[in-house]
Image (cartoon, one colour):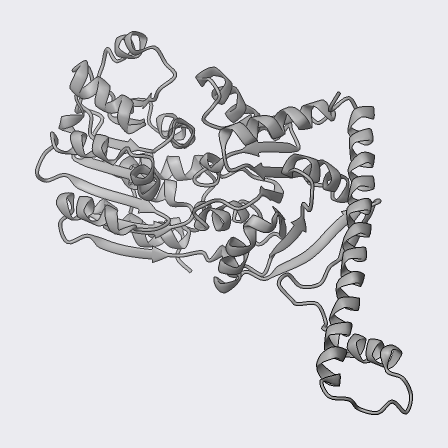
Length: 455
């Protein structure tokens, strides 16, 4: 097996690797690093947690010439959190080489202060496309047109969030010999024209980690029934003891509501989504890194790119419209050979999503947590065992008189009588079910009132 000792790196790169305590390259690093050092254009398809960040940072460490006081490499990420995470790893580069300058350029920092801070051009720029474009094209203080390397991290997210035009505007002002490296979990069709425009004979590297078939992740469906996602979540939390539990909501509004509900119930949480202010998001990132909080409430902004250690459980409050994001959500746990559990709270409206995920190869357990006990439910989608035939025979026996002669239309009349009796029984069953639901709802309301969660 290849180790980092087998690469012919310069001393500064070796020091960078030593500071990270790396011994063996991951498969994506082993495939990317040699080609990146040679200046090849690269399309790397790989999930988070495979070591892709250092797959492009190590070649940059090897190639940057710090005697040249110009920008030589640009790295963009679709969110400030992802950019901050890359920058955190890049700080070790400056420890390995004190003459190297790396600059983080994102939103949340005053434009004038940001411009003033760039008194000397950095060697590497890491940031969000919009803010880099602003400093480069609008304010003309950041000269990224001198760079010969451009790294697009999470390229499909960059496209989905609408930032590809900003990347295009930046790259369009850079040299014709620009080396581009794109790292992504998927390559959507709409991304291909952009890659074709800026890449020359790109090398495609596929390192797919299929979370859907990861046997170490247990997927568990939890029915909400008449409860909201937040209420169902509160009911099930006593049923497991996570180290870190990542809770996903589909919108920032839902995330905020669930976060408030958890706080009222006495839970200390980290909240991270697009609805927070820059200062709050920065603070949330620090809390994530410190692992001081057990519960993290997030939108899908955290499902990709953010690699938080210690996540033992994931809870999905319903299913995202893009079902691949459910796979990315569940992939936050069960990493590095460890086991993990992904709970998916569902309602009737989630039926189609569940069936599509099952077709993708995800096996769901089906459970409920009630009165302090987990109960195994019938496999999702399995029809109840039909007892109609037996029931009809029982009813037929009761309404058939002994030694009664068979009269014309007897069978039709008998079938109608059986149907009426079954309808009456069904109505009675529904009435009883409604009564039970009302009782259960009343108990839930009283419990939430006693905890001060609702008034």
